[in-house]
Length: 66
Image (cartoon, rainbow, N blue to C red; front, side):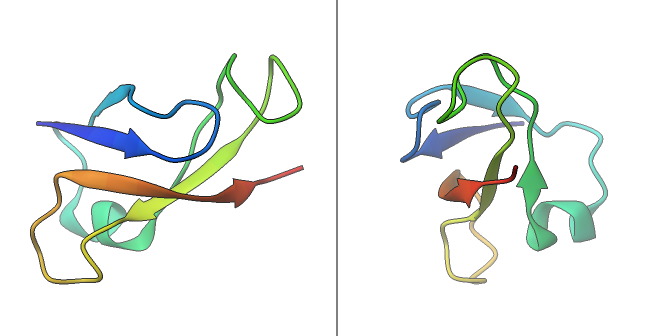
């Protein structure tokens, strides 16, 4: 199941969360990306943009992890 990343440097990219434990999807994701705020090797943080309603179709950007 793909989710769309919204906001931040990887805005608009899709993340495949197939096989993720449901709790992993609810908690959040820190990704390794060539599209980080500070260039390649960035670690943008995302969490479900649905506000916990259970309709996970998008992850909203929550900042960059150093």
